[in-house]
Image 1 (cartoon, rainbow, N blue to C red):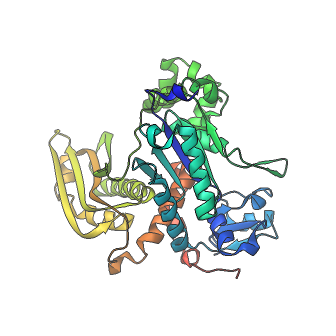
Image 2: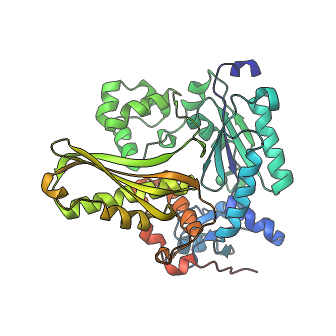
Image 3: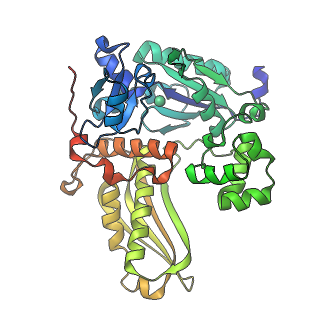
Length: 411
Ligand SMILES: [Mg+2]
């Protein structure tokens, strides 16, 4: 069996179970076995994580805390201790680095690893997965699930299937490791809901459903022309994902030099308020991606293509690396030339370069909120968006002061 990996990519997706809640139990063992909800405890608080004992009652992340408390009235509700989670997250990532440096962290508790070249040192992918689980359990006293596949998308869906589940109000123990063998991607993907594919948000899902597509198999069978009509530009990418084709590399921090987003507009932008709205959107996307992968950058660039196709790039070097949306926005606004609107704008791009691992650094006064917390918030926002679509949440709604206090209600 293991020979099947020869000449194929071997991608792992390692994911800690109920991360925030598990760290709380680790620090306070008397909580073990109790329904725990971690999240904003203020009036507009949102659930960031829930233990399986709370999920049995229907509690889910991104749910309003008020609703979660109603569903599970004897839950132990705890504020979010970002600093502590970040510390454990670092231990987790360090542990993964013993196997390879080809690691792309996603949020605090997940990471993709490319272990294609690791067989001689550590054995086949399945064995590496089980070594990771053992180490996490022995050294961090936490539990992790690992998905194995020939691509990131398949590995991610495999790890989801390795998790504990709630069936008829009971917690089913996890499989721990799910391996999708090379050549078996199709049979693994076919029965799954298309909602599970990257890029299928609620809107795309509704459109796919309207042409009878609910399973990945349905999507795979759809003619390319229909797919293009239904899903637009993302159609061909979705079609490929449905066939198990995903060549996205594992992007380790050391490889990536910059990250950015750009957008071409069907109609030229001619008004300052339109340009500003787009800058807000681009800054939000860049900040979210930087936060999600725990990097910050010192050089901020704005690219503008005018109606006559003249293209300019303006950059600014910041006093310290940032991945904060408000900092990016503040500086990128100053880079827009005064006569830009008069010329008409057909493309805008914002990028961050000179990337560093987002470690301790000097905070500036106008940041107000620490990077670490900002990171954790960006990551929660990303997690919610990944599950419920890009428009499910805006940063401002999470920036409720009460929600950000690291208050522990249970001691
Ligand atoms: Mg997790």
